[in-house]
Image (cartoon, rainbow, N blue to C red; front, side):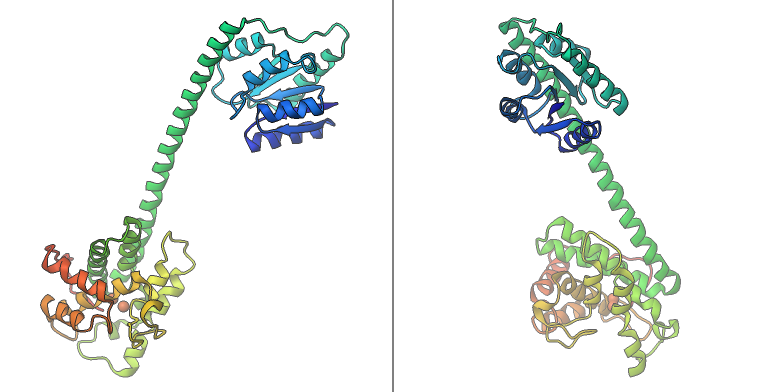
Length: 371
Ligand SMILES: [Fe+2]
Ligand SMILES: [Fe+2]
């Protein structure tokens, strides 16, 4: 026995084909009405099982053509249709000449039973397929009404799916935010200097990124990276972080490990942005004098160059255990003097603009910062 399946949905087509083959039928599958007609005319089946909504030629049109084709009209026609099905669909399908109308999803055993009994019936000498019972005019009118109704329902469903997707995206963003804030709080528990610093660097880096015209998504990645860019300092002994004077070379070499430590912690997390890469490069300098890898110019990611500028400006303008704050003007002078040499020129200029022309101020978290 040979069954022809017509369905535009690949998964449904596969499912039905597999089910029928499992029951011992030979199966050919088509992805729309036209392809089904072509296949049927070259390999006439013993039964066709068709979906309703399909691009090109839908199931209703296929059923009409089927019953009008002298070679095909005696072959039983079954509809097996998905969602958006209502009682009028069945009545209309039977009027068009369909022999069976099944609504998805159907229990596989029940589906196979119905298909088998239709095939048994078709083998009997007294079997005659359903004659189309509607006139052409009436058929056209109802056909249009049925299709419009289905399309409206399909549109409604895709609108609901979109809304659901948007809700999922919002939940995901909130989850990432929550996780990042939790990580930042671990640093806060241990080192309040660094915590306040990260928040301010994050706000400034995001402002610079926006000033540079980066797209919102990239700005968001830079903002998130800023919030945790110094988490590698959990590796640095607290006495070094809060030491009220300059660090010795050995102490400084320990501090210099913090970008790599942060990278090792964050790299396995599948953030939607290259957070770990932004962070490992935030102390790299254009002339190669930075750490940990001595990268130069375009080897340094734009997000890291922006974070680098925000980091230096915040650190210089805030009080820290071993030095008093130099103030924002001195900080802006420093990055302007070394723009293009140590710091990204565009990011440095944008930083000056956000402070001097856009009225940006570093948020006050009530705590002094630390680089
Ligand atoms: Fe740092
Ligand atoms: Fe920093």
